Amino acid sequence: MKDKPNVFARPTILCLLLVVVTLAVYWPVTRCDFLNFDDPDYFTSNPHVLAGLTPGNVAWAFTTGHTCNWHPLTWLSLMLDVDLFGQGPAGPHVTNLVFHLANTVLLFLLLRRLTLATGRSAFVAALFALHPLHVESVAWIAERKDVLSTFFGLLTLDAWGRYVEKSKVPSPESRVFYGLALGCFALGLMSKPMLVTLPFLMLLLDWWPLRRVTSGKWQVASVQSLVMEKIPFFVLSAISCVVTFIAQQKGGAVVTLVKISLAQRMENTFVAYARYLAKTFWPIPLANPYPYPEHWDGLLVIYAVALIVGLCAVAGLQARRFPFAVTGWFWFVGTLVPVIGLVQVGNQSLADRYTYLPLIGIFIIAAWGLAGMCASWRLPQPAAGILAVVLLTACGLRTRDQIGYWQNSGTLFRHTLTVTENNFVACNNFGTWLSKNGQVTEAMNWFRQSLQIQPDNPDALYNLGNAFARLGNWDDAITNYQRALQMNPNQADILDNLGFARAAKKQFAEATACFEAALKLNPDYADAHNNLATVLFIQKNFDEAVRHFREALRLTPGNPQIYSNLGDALVKQGQTNEAVRCYQEALRLKSGDAQIKTKLQVLGVPISN
Image 1 (cartoon, rainbow, N blue to C red):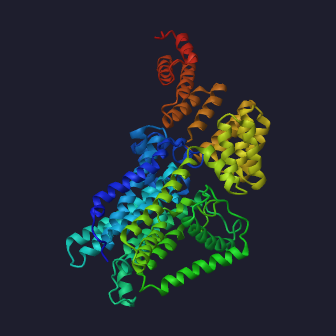
Image 2 (image 1 turned 90 degrees about the vertical axis):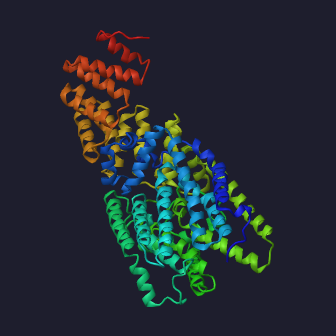
Image 3 (image 1 turned 30 degrees about the vertical axis):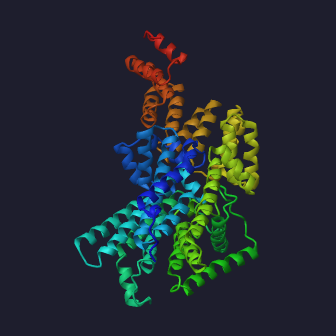
């Protein structure tokens, strides 16, 4: 039934209100720092992203499986951030927020177009905008893939809805919208492969609100025609699944059945669904990450299975009476399937970010269900409006509070450690933050605590080795690096730091072998190129040193230390003119550096004050 029109039901005004309120709640996110969890891979230590959009980096984005995923559009968007805003955290945070605002407006316009219910569509969009479970997707730069893929996913559904409307009378225009839907879907999959279930979601929309099964029954012929119509979308989903599995398998992200059995995964699947529902209605406390337990309590598993199976049955049995509940519930269940843990990637048992798209289904049930209740109870329209405002205010306040934990790695992981148990990832990441801020001894305690929980954790061993290296204890640093390599032999950064420790002990042959092994794993590792060049320089192999210094500069063109190092090697080769240019560039990048000024003065170059 169509909502009664009023001044606040104008779509333009509602879109503006949604943007203003969401912006007011989320604005503090623009002052958040980078995290030491995934952000280095996606931004702060990624030379391709930091160099911005170049032909070479664009080609890299489409061919790399870095971070165990294939999502070229995510890489390109982050590169564009660097070109537009520089290498600081503010730019990518603003971009994430802009996409969240766009998704909110798109969701409202999509539901309004499909259902003709302005008020309920706005309520769903407002819940989407303000629910605290969505903070992780917006506040975490590494989760650009969430907001970007959802943007293209909603555009896909909007174009699909327009195609359905136009196809009632076949025309060239309907084919255009079909093509737009297919194109947007491909772009969404290139942002994050979690969208692979979108064709099934389109089938749900055929049931409600599009009501394309006019007989009220899922007749075989009707189902076949609706499925056949979406074959190209299913093909794209299948291709994305294969590419993603290959990338994750090659990167070592897929957890084997030996580590987490199929029985454990099935238990966690039902418990995760139940926990997602619980956090939707009572989003306290939230954390990142949620550790994977050794086993769940048997009664909890039974309760979770009964809850999820029961809700599926209720939705099916009430399909005709409450068609929106079928679409909403299976929207939630279905879009979570790729990340529910049957194919386990990573160590988390669930993650707030995974709810970014799926929760729309629960919000649809809430909006249409509450509207139906208010109508059956004959509540006046202002009372329903007040109830909606109260719910949204509570969400907004809780979201604003949750954003506060995302200010930096210290605030996030300190909070996570207070609300979770046996969280070896949070222990390690909190220790990394402490070490970066000069609290090395305290950081080592957290690394050791992480290892007590998970003894075969290469990240904690690596970071403990780094802490020993900062204290100048090279022997213990080497021991921990070697133990980390036993757990994860194909880790370039561990090999690089082991090489640095070997070089500090003047074990140059062993150091060279480590750097070369790191570069074999990651040819674009600028730090390994620089370290190898330094060792070659010490060994008076100046030609090879120059080659590796140049390669390091190609990957990190704004590094003054590498310019200075290259200048030193060029001097040894007798190429003083080019050496001077390197020193001058280093001084431009690091003005006032006394050591670089001295090098220029030795070469007879006057220094202007």
